Length: 439
Image (cartoon, rainbow, N blue to C red):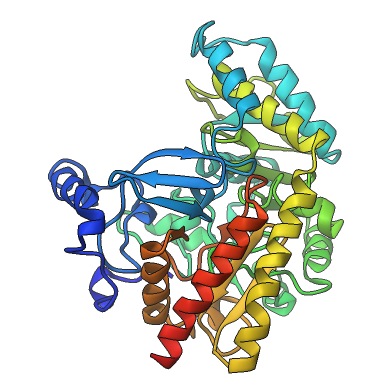
């Protein structure tokens, strides 16, 4: 949930000498860039204080403008699955950049990248590359509407699918000015993990709904997992009503498994959207799926989508190198071991002391939620104590651990995190929790 800046008053890094260069930079940049950031989630709007400016990143560590180093669990909001600056990815991007950063024309790396994704995700028969997850979702929704010839889509409260009009129109946890009334009217909200709410929407709009889009694992209201039968039920309802099922795997794709959440839960979507980890740090998005749907795109069909930087050579090189490392290495085993060790270090103490904290994760995606009960949907997420999280965030920040500056957004572990990183993180987190709950 995106809270207003004024709601967080106790946790703040303002005036701390540890951050003096970041604070000075923030004051200057706010005069030129709205809020001092090019994406609102980078600001400390939900936790108070002013954002930290970073100068470098390598492996599991970030270094800020004041020379402070942090164990990083933001992971650039998901892309840094191998850690920052993995040598194979850096080398591939540098070599490709030297040949020309953009052609605006076809090139062989697009073919290699397409083959790499399709080999990992067999239900994807054709794919298009774009420049961001938002662009992938926006394009997939347009394609699904063109294919089904129905305008209305079903989304889920608390889900996040980027910042296009269609996905912000009725989102439960974000609001925006400038959204046309028609977009709002065409977007219907159901409750995550509640098939009856989806069934009711289909029954009342049976000839108008052509698309259902869902995060198979929600990453923006806490890490919320699908309950048994939920994703399978969505698949059945879409088949029954002739609707296109879109899985937004921008976060989960290539992170939870090589084949994403669809491999993990064995449920196949008609269209899938990817981004973040797919490019290993380069700006990327992709959407793909059934041949008969994808062939509706121009020039084969009548649905338009284009982009100057779509399939950019440097991005393709970074993606190819990243997927090769994920396919041949121990990344998934290492990330699971590190995530399990983190929770094993925290959970016994949290339960013993009866602290109102929920530990929720799937693979290397995790969240530490200040709530008295598990979060299973958007309504549950409304009970999260954002004030407590803001104290937690700043305590960790002061002690060299960097989380997403949000009480609900997923944190990420990379293949570069070491056992020593996890051990130190457990120590810092337990100390912070003890200060919050016992003073």
